[in-house]
Amino acid sequence: MPQLDTSTWFTIIMAMLPTLYLITQLKLLSMNYYQPPLTKNPNLQTHNTCWRPKWTKTYLPHSQPQQS
Image (cartoon, rainbow, N blue to C red; front, top):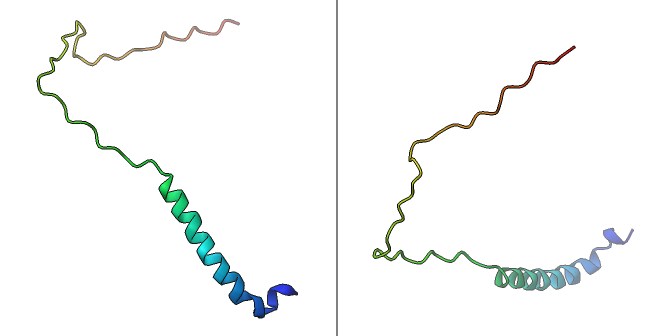
C-alpha cells in the first residue's frame, strides 16, 4: 500500500504547506471587508409622514366554516 510508504511523506507535506498558504492568502485578499457607514449630515431634514406612529396589527379574515 503506497500510503504506508513514509519515504514520500516529507516531500508531500513540504509541497502542501506553501500551496495551502498561497491559497489562503489569495482567498483573504479577494474578500470584501466591511466598510463603515458614512457619518450622517446633521443638517438633513426629517420627513413628516401622515402615518400614525401607533403599531397596528393586521388580522387575516376568519376562515369560512366547512359546508357538508
